[in-house]
Image 1 (cartoon, helix red, strand yellow):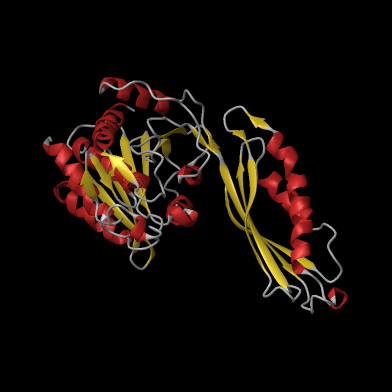
Image 2: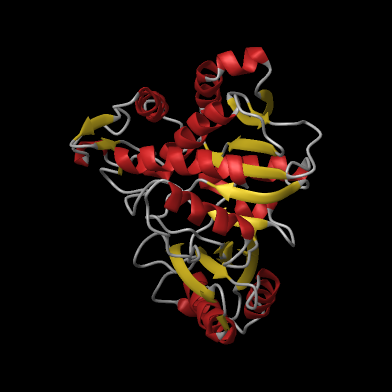
Length: 380
């Protein structure tokens, strides 16, 4: 193992050992700053910490000419999802155990491996002369509602970027786009009564059924549209709760839905369809209320944009095949920083074990990614 490979392993292990489940991202930022201490002290890398909440700091690192006209943004999040039932893991989820060339742990793939790789690459290129700037943004709260990216975008951190590289895992794919998202809650309010006398009450669950049928019907034409880059939008009702016991009419109930949008079946169109469905006829005495809980638009750059091509060439330079250019059905921080004309590439080490028990990353994948990132940082 080379010195550089050992550095990325040590950094990744230390990151995974921090249980940053919607918290403690500041500890990850501390770890990054400690690793980059020589470059920070020499002024080769400049740093800002932007607090989202106590113990939860976004970290922004820049290299190159502060007055550069061309800037490459790099994004990675420091939080992870819950490990679930830890007894089902082969190794403790925050132990960062290494076996047979794989590092296991929550966040190993999503996405502390990508974050560690871009940090090691940034340390290397900080000692070179760049004719452009690189702005690395390590964010908080991506797994909940992209809290950190929302904060940074609102403060203008995406405005000057010509390109954005998001270091999310992708099985060697080089993605140029991602779908948007809408999370919503529909609550039905009724009146409790004995189940033998439904005429004295109003069944809230029946109100949910009426909305669900209307919503799925209203959104079907939008789901039928085939976006040339992002494919078909989707709409799923994933949660439903209501009722207290079998012999009582439920006085309240709710459901939650998740929609993945495209450029031609966008957020505004789906929200309008949901609002129309919330006006559907319901049983007497039942009232519906709709809450749009989270919205993030799609981001779709050209599949042959300049940053995609730079990543592809970098892969070839380090002995890898060109990656498949695809799109993300899931979301990243990308949409918060996206603007017309932005070159976008979502590319990082990792696989399909994100959010799963026994999540892992292959160390060789991480080593290769460091090499690709260095090449991209130098040549974009």
